Image (cartoon, rainbow, N blue to C red; front, side, top):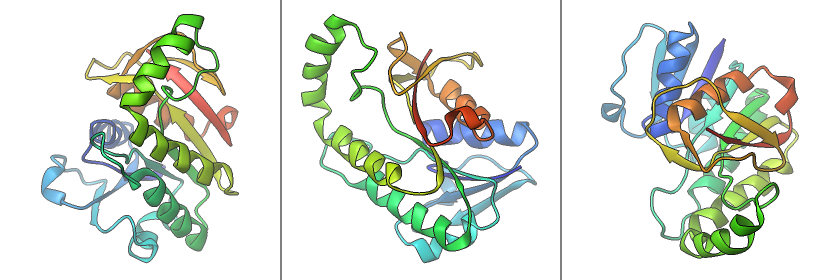
Length: 208
């Protein structure tokens, strides 16, 4: 399988690259600064490009079985990174005929499936703190919902640096029980979901 990873130098993206290579896949990592990617492999192609330019990333997504993006804001300031990168990636995929897209969002802004305490007390408080990144991811999701690509939105809760377990709870359209998940497990779930029709054109929340 050939996959392209955007956000390959981030926490989830780094796990994605390593796990895909360990599984024998051909990986293209699109980065701004190749020096930040500390992985070398004969099946790894590193492409330096501006993700916001569909023409610049077209060759990186052409002919791939799947494109996976874990791009998003790195702080609490107003940002349009998630929505703008998704718009550009989808434009490049449409131009080149690549169909399968998986993106990382978050389950924090979703209240379906949550208990009363979390839904009515915890999340309104957390939502005020994370207002800007959540707004960006919500806008990204709306863009993806409107596309005709074969997409899956993966919504994790709070991310940790825990070890890979290979087992997470998942629920389409609502949150499963659980407040954290390891970045390694998010990457593992994304790779497993690539060819799982169960999640095609659905948002799926996960938890460790």
